[in-house]
Length: 120
Image (cartoon, rainbow, N blue to C red; front, side, top):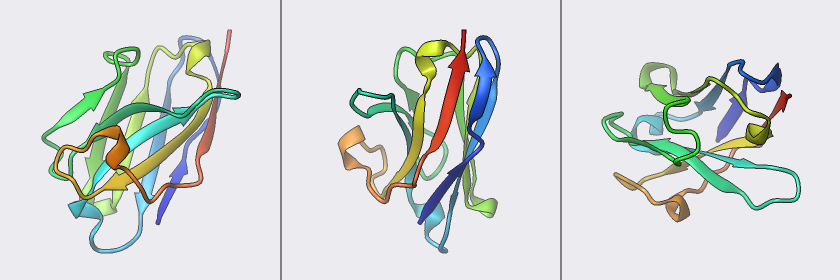
């Protein structure tokens, strides 16, 4: 089970840090991905981190602004979001995959999501 938190309302140019907390002793064996879904749009991949933390990758539109990290001792993956833009407004979800370097379609075990709203 995954639980996201940290969403909220922020002005453009601001920052937010999301957390994804997993339950169970096998959390460290899963890659964690972040996804988002804006109102009226399809869910899109944001980025992911391998279970080792050695492989991290992002969609182009957030590369350089967002940073994913993980602390397996706390069963937590973080999404640090900087220089936020109104187009980043969405519900953000985390999901898990047992693959070493998963594709977006390889993720499951979705959390309930946390709302991020960026005002202009």
